[in-house]
Image (tube, rainbow, N blue to C red; front, side, top):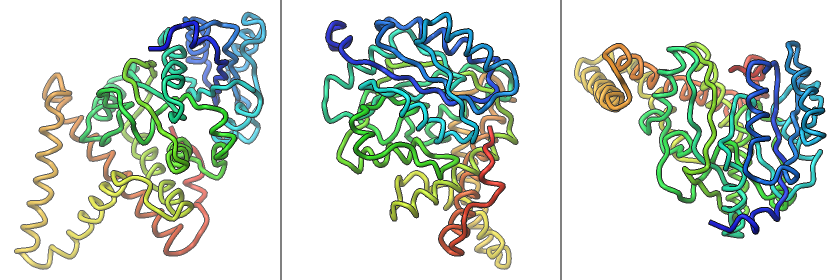
Length: 345
């Protein structure tokens, strides 16, 4: 790792899109001020969508206590990519870090990110592992399913693994010069704006680096119904990204779509006993894979069954959204449905 003296040369802007986060924003901002990186080199912009709880009062109090190192920016339009761009444009630092209001940074988060950027000039973005903090039983089960490769594929920021080049990270630290070159977040995207940006980073010839030692904690509040809506939106908006770039941005996005397509084929297979039996065999193989993958993540029989069920939610909802996106954006050439524009959590 680069020496601390060298790391301290770069200034960092941290951008946090925020809306009604009074329960979490205090811990998030405390973790930023507790970094082992020189505090005078970190500027934080909390871009708030005109919160209606106590969020704004907390941020304003931190503005005073931090002597201006934390600043509140208004985002009356309330869309996440707009918030991100407002925060980016408000600062001038060489490094831009994107953060969620539910996150708490480990003390060396900033120093490790900047060190990784300094070690390889072709690396335009760095990121690490997200540790989920569960607030209820459903969130615990969902988090376990989403830390499994069976559930989310090779998303290293969720599943972990060795340090390596990847196609995307969460809470990425970017070189401002690269974003100035390729453009900021696409404000038309309700979901997938970070994935789309990372796709453009790689398309421009730069690299994205994952290091499991770069860590943050994330407070998960979730339910099975909200998870279904969220991943349905992910699949839906992924098609929008594909249409924009006129190519498939990652192979793993197609697997849930083909799974949903396979399930739909059962309507045709049921008219023939042989094909119906073959179709059922395919579903049985999927179920077996889900139950086997759930074993190392579960603590008891109930949790084992729930994790396998979450796998089904993840895959079916994403695939269903992807199918809807193909219909709306490609086959019918329509704009996004109003139900898919509203952000779900």
